[in-house]
Image (tube, rainbow, N blue to C red; front, side):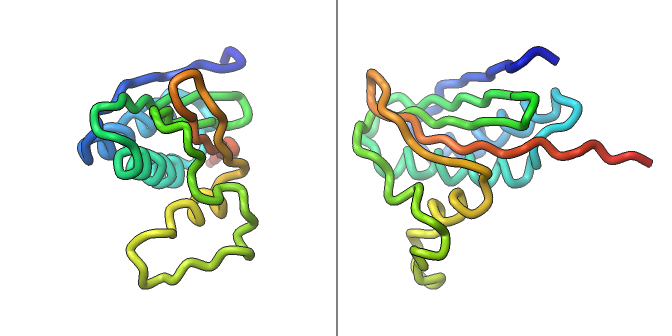
Length: 140
């Protein structure tokens, strides 16, 4: 496999973006021999996309980028809002959202289940990302 291959898609600025993003991640990870865990990748992608739809102005494009690496995958969601997301890089034991609240658990899931995560400015807003390691192939 080459060092990396990337899948990109522009998503609608609606809740329909979430299942589209999950499908793209699932399809991309099916293309490699030792993919990252697809269920985890789909869950975390859904959280990032839902946050982008909820917290950015309607009509601003959202782009999903899935990069397949020999070491796993990196997923980025680009949106037009330059404001950083909530505290994406806090240690999981520092922030304890109330489990009964509707909001606040998505970033905790991303921090807890990914091998790394963060955000960076882009020319048109920001990219929020996470990485997952490749799983070892099952034999037998």
